[in-house]
Structure formats: C-alpha cells, structure tokens
Amino acid sequence: MIIDERTYTLHPGRVPDYFKLYEAEGLPVQRPILGNLIGYFATEVGTLNQVVHLWGYDSMGEREKRRAVMLQNADWQAYLKKAMPLIVKMENRILSPAPFSPLK
Image (cartoon, rainbow, N blue to C red):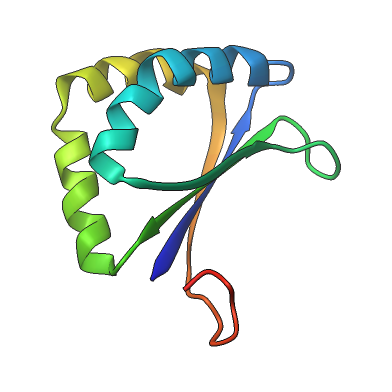
C-alpha cells in the first residue's frame, strides 16, 4: 500500500467554503474513482488554513490509473474551476508504511 498525502493551503478563512464545495461537488466524483479515502482534515495548530487528505492505493500504478480517469471526468474539471481560486498552494507526498504500521 502507498498513501497519497495532499496538503492544500487556502486563502485565509476559506476552509469552510472549500469544505462545502468539496463535499457537494468534489467528493462525489473522487470517492468512486479514487476509492480508498483514509481521511480528510483541517489544521488547527501550526500552519493554518490548510486541508490535508489521505488516499490509499495498492501501488503507484493503481494511483496513476485512477487519477488519469478522474482527470478526464467532466464533473471533476467543472469542480476544479470553482475550487482552484480558493487554493494558494498545493503539496503532495507519497508515503509508504513502515513494516510495523497498522496501515499497510
């Protein structure tokens, strides 16, 4: 298993707007295509105005295939046009679990 960790820094005060839009228009597209949503979070301490989401995949190949399908989805493209103005910075990391990790 690999975990795709994505961190979006939003304009100050826009986390509630982002969550409302994402829940209504982004999540309904992503969940059936990407599959394994591990968690979706907002920061409370440290760097503020960030959302962090984690998606699990069996391999990099599976991730690439699923994301390619999502990028071709017209509803996803329409969502992105609304969401991108809320986002200041996007970061992405691929995490591999340690041998003793409960998530494998």
